[in-house]
Image (cartoon, rainbow, N blue to C red):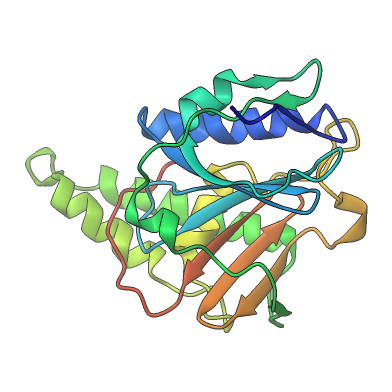
Amino acid sequence: MTAPLRLVDAREADGFAAFLVRLLRWDKAAVVRLRASGTVLAVFGQPPFGGGVLAVRTAELDGAAGDLDSTVSAGQLLDGIDDVTGTVAVPPAVTGPAWAGLLPPRGGWEQVQGLPSAEDVRAVAAAAVTEFRDRSEALRPESRTRAELDAIADDIWSRRLGATGLPLRVVHAAHALGFLRPVRTAVPAPRAAEQPAVLLLAAGPWLRLRTPYGSVAVRRGLPGLSVSPIR
């Protein structure tokens, strides 16, 4: 069994736990992929927002983790997080879904210009969620089917954020996962002082919305999958 991983900042355990709780809220059988590079631990998960959206939360480790690359149960990983000691127990590996074998690259990311401010990105997410709610509530009860709701969702979240080419489903995922919340000094965010509040990065076919609390990435050119927004 892999020895527990120790985080440099024990408070980061809360961030990992919150990320896993949100994933498990939507899928009680959710799995995540753990990958360590040097002293950086990354936890990848796929929220149910369609279009190949992947989310990742990272934190600094107190020492290198060696060769760690494993797909595990999100629930078991959550149970192994100790927010007092700042340690993470790695559960046994499980057979992962297809997405776990196709992750964004580790390097080669370049900034994409034209991304609105963090406040504007949050406003776009809130406006789109409101539009979905208003349009779905305007349907007659007999027309409020899953297919009709998914069609509305796909219409809204397939749109692009300005001229950036970023699908709004990525913004929605970041919003729903709590990655877009304002940075507050009382709640530390990873390397918050070293980066702008929100950045858009590109590497090959991938686009990545990076915030101090985590990132959401999508591979361009994949067909969108309809799924109703989550507030």
